[in-house]
Length: 100
Image 1 (cartoon, rainbow, N blue to C red):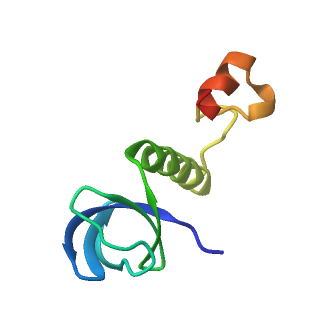
Image 2: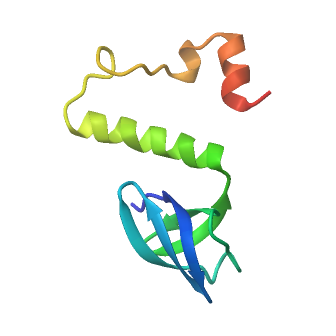
């Protein structure tokens, strides 16, 4: 399984870019997303940018990755993490979640 990591472009150089995300900097191939500029957000899989994303989506993906990391480190979802399944959310919470 491959997990996409949100990374922000620091510096673009042709079909590659120096990007930063989740505490690391890496050289990312941007051939699949076209030209990028400093400040752009990318969803990166195995050092290849696969999708352009906005800052809100990057924050959402990072929040989910933090959640997964917490569980892997032994956090109890029911006690330690403020998380609710969509089936347990109110109609208002679902509208916020879906951007409606």
